[in-house]
Image 1 (cartoon, rainbow, N blue to C red):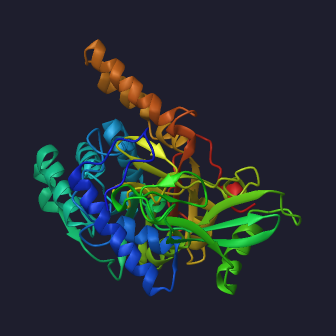
Image 2: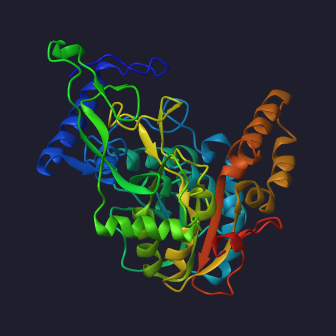
Length: 422
């Protein structure tokens, strides 16, 4: 159904986008009806992001870069990939010469890493990209063909998780896009937040302009809303385990508290870790250790959405058109990986990682010959990557190895892994 945009700060979707969103919403509605009136938020998020042919990551809309909805670190500067390659180069002598990238996005990071490794003398490294989206796979192929064509013969695309992985697993901004469950607590009472159909404001409002009200605030552009239900025993145990891990007080804080549990992110880490033979897992994403993630003062949670380079907090607006993300609980990631026998090789801020991998030196070497305007643009991009007010502190880097003797993560003397086991 066609509806007015209740969020004037967001651009209006074009007719083709509206049609896609209506198809996604119809699929959500079908799921809600089959479930008897409500679905868990992770089920909704899975449909909105990954429904074949129409979900945000499964459809044909451009997502990355200036023409998309957000920019990732590789799109900001090729030195990001150069730094990742510098870390990988330290691991390669002891491992199978193969990189396995999950969630390769536009393919920029793969191109940067392969180019840098070639320059470092590792020009026989194989590259595997695990990608379910045909649209993203085509874009990755086009990126590599345009920027590093002679490496294409060493790149393969896989549509399923292999039974065994030897080498280096890489995932940049993957875990934040895996579906999460939502919960709320008010004066100690736990509720699961779910997606349900929303009643019309009034029956006499014309169907084409009807808006609906969500329990958490402004009218929504769909016929959906966030509701709440009593949790079942399994859901309650999952929440209680996360809060206990975070050291929550025995007396819960007063007032409303909302947050997320990323069970699918932990399950992904466990599944890949179990398949890792001789190798290393390198994960880069935004998030916190459990004590920060579930701090009582973070009462609004971390869920966020992106549409055409605008951030908003309404995950039900135009389903299928927006990226929906939640920050990563790195304590849970650590627990999932180490439970399979892997050893944590380091954890720290992205700024510490990039500087530890030689970012300053790389910039000095490669920007010295650029014209002043280009040098300024390059410096501004790097400032976004390392500034504590931007990506430098919010984004974290963590690595795990099958062998405790693996080279540690380069963190410029600022390893924080102790906070993950506190």
